[in-house]
Image (cartoon, rainbow, N blue to C red; front, side, top):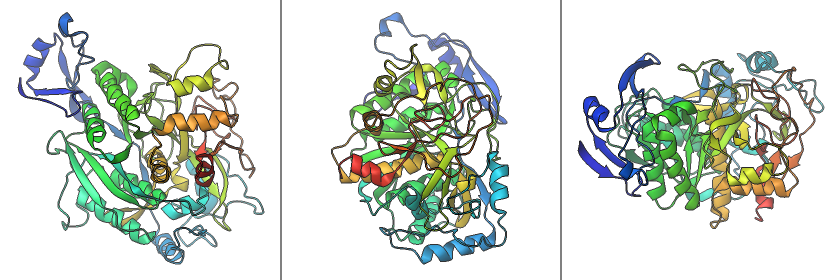
Length: 527
């Protein structure tokens, strides 16, 4: 083997070799497979090490090239809608004021209004108080500022003192290249367009190469655009956005990126809008190694938000559908969302007032992933919530929280300079990252978000929903404009399903603790 190195946190030893040597060294057999039309490699028998190394080696990974999924859904906006959105945003640039929702009033030409929502979500459209229906123009009803309005931003402190991160897989490029090339310079200029649109300071961007020069192309640009724009936009600005750029689209690169984040002092939060079926992570050894890296994040007081996935109560299939709906596959979940040491973020369909943009209600997005892990144990903070309330020991439950993910209530996102509608849990997870960045910026001593969220929730009387493990058997009923209860700073979402599971009052396997209320969380945290 050649090129033997260790990561700076002394967690992972890397080396290069060929398949024949790897087979011999670890007494295994590596085969070729097809995944998403690409040839990948994976070992079909367990990798072994000498017994003398048993206390030192947690796992052998890197013997395969299983690819990651992104969790973004997007659609081209009608031109009239994009122009209307730009005008209304320009008229409401006061960052700390109450902002009118950009789609208030008459929907511009090209929008199909509420009938589009019903088709896209498969759910009834709940009525808004004082109106016959939500007179909204979908998709992409929200800019980042409009999300802040809907999620109760009362002029709360921004994330200006905090550096946050995101994991990307892209060519790097150099600022000034042709717009539309899809490299990270294009992602940066798109982020700056969002900054200008929302009246935010120009974001400082830093790229950290992970595991050498990237070999991937520009295929994931929409993913990195929504990640960065939603996180920075909901934060109201950050000190810096750091992109940990993988050399290849492989699950074995993720623990390397998390290790780089852990060693990057001054970067407090990381978002991962990527994943793959947790069974693949367990089989390849990457789950154990990634858990070790995430444990270090928790111990350092850092937070890693992870998209739960866009395939409902099923495992991500080889090809994730582009439609705004869940797909069926193996009943399982995606990792790293199921890690006990990550903040798993599911999806909702968000409805806000057409009058002032304030919160009205949410339903569980039917494609938002949630359920119980087959491989991972409960975290201590989740176990404390479940104690004495569930008879049997359970594994890790996901998600922890949920935010807007339905493409019908998606975000106005720049992709290669062109506005698009973007949804998915790839939108929901960085929204949580951005909101928590504001809390960290205001309370520099606060650490990992997840245990704090559960403490607030249970301290306010929240707990697991009765019968949350029951399979979904009835048609979900919309809440008819009734605003869900707020428990410890979280909107309790109790309508909708994701395949097997029904949202209901309390913690559930669709939306977790619920969605974040910005102002109430600041009050709970003592701002």
